[in-house]
Length: 165
Image 1 (cartoon, helix red, strand yellow):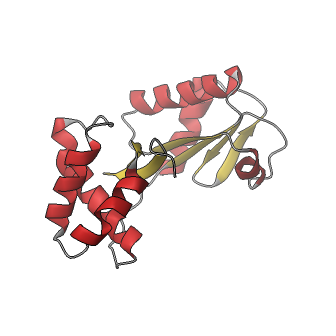
Image 2 (cartoon, rainbow, N blue to C red):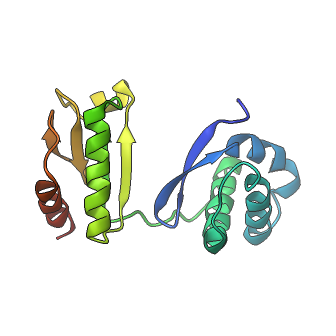
């Protein structure tokens, strides 16, 4: 596995890309498998901070999330982080319209101070799983709400409000 592979993990309800996580877990497996989550998390944060930005105020959240991922990697039982109540997907290859839709959704969520998971899926096989016949497509909590267009922010707001009711 290349040294700079990026793995997405959930940190305090948000997906975060971590560079070099898989290689680091392989390197730590034998020496840290019997350590406490606190020791594992602190060491992982220390090692990963070399290539990843880890905000000072979020170090404890990262440590817990990384220890959880390490336990999963070892095949040990873990308590999963509770999922966000809102999951928004942008489906599209990364064209200008897809990127605009992603920015519009991000802006509306920020204006509404709405926590949630926002992902941009560009892999054609993954997009195909949603049976959409055009891009960009917008999926909110597993419901396809828009296909082949970039809706205005007012409409995006309506869909998001409806999703959290």
